[in-house]
Length: 394
Ligand code: 3PG
Ligand code: MG
Image (cartoon, rainbow, N blue to C red; front, side, top):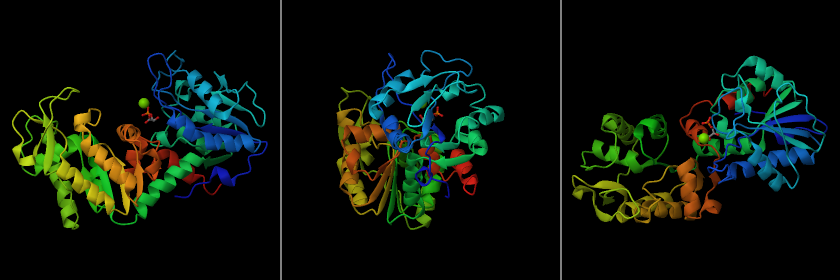
């Protein structure tokens, strides 16, 4: 992937428009509950400020209705947090599309929620042209939104005098490309989560590439069904059994495998108080729900991970939110942390597991992308990256 990079450009005295992904979770009162994306956006902003650019930053927050900025839509809390991290006040500017605000070299303004502008989601050309006219350099640093072709992630890149990738975008592209396109073998992928249906494309894409495909959660249950096992009342998608079988066949034809659990942790309900039983996968009763890998299966996963050259991780293997079903994910997290392999992780649940088991510093790369991370793994061309590639030569 060839894109212009911010760090290669002279930004002194230039008006720089940075599209970041500052779409962070908030509580009911609007307080930011997790600020990874804001922190990850600092290097590009700091680089521009330090090198004398006049900096405009914008992001979407949530999925607002275009045309108004409702109380839940405002980037005001993000402006405060950005200011704390940059050690300078960050002014929030509304109604900015037609200009009418000033920002001096070495200064930063935050442009209010770009998804509140009419035409943003449909990638409207007139809007994109207006925004492009605000700047000398357009920087896309919003990897988390790279799978969306919207006016600030896509259209603007066509019309801005210069369009480049920010440092976070560059790091994401580098890390993901390294893991997928030139991995040190064995390449092990872990795909957990509730449903095969939402991750079918990624499972098939990975089945063509990886040496071992570990499935967890509801996905693993569907694979167990496909392998002829009884799963009681476990979460699964019986209509996806054929697809699961296909994924296993693709792997088998390549001399690779999908290591299914040989023991599991079951309960009759998903709750903090549920009584958990560790049993062989052949002992699952009609009312059991499989909620985690058992210790033997977890140890096997840990062994696979220990011998990996590259690890791609999306999704937990059990209901790790409850201690009695956290063992599999915990053992996996610890194996990843101790492995010599280059590891890359992404997705909301995965990030929560990484935080819970305190392994953030031991994962090779943690992606800020949820949907974008998955679509990259699916082998899709992300429209925001494609737009930057199209501007590589000029
Ligand atoms: C995300 O939270 O995954 C990104 O910010 C993209 O948000 P979206 O799914 O609302 O486009
Ligand atoms: Mg969201």
